[in-house]
Image (cartoon, rainbow, N blue to C red):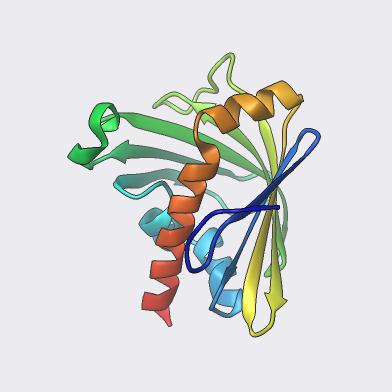
Length: 174
């Protein structure tokens, strides 16, 4: 796994069509799980730094939908300032507080899936690890090319940034 610099880096690896990211949080597993499963927490950390997330639909159960839109509010982010990016997750499996599986889609502001953008199958695992919680994210793509397309869009850098935001939230909640 490659490691980003920082006090608690996001570790990443690619195995064929699967992007694996993991990070450890100094918080109990139940609290970390709640940060991913409760909209009032998700809206506070989901998205890169400088972006705000509006949750437009949230039904946390197998078959349920989480639809959200993020907007760049940071003028220092140049061309990204004012841009909006929306996504939709359709939950496949939920095993509290151990695992969340969902299909992830890029959408327009109405929640319609965008043609030409990859569909992803995301598996989140929450493991107790040396008094902390390790979150392992496995994102499966249809092809290695679509995985590379999303990597080229900055998914690792963006996810690393939002993991830092999650870390800050978890500190506040404890």
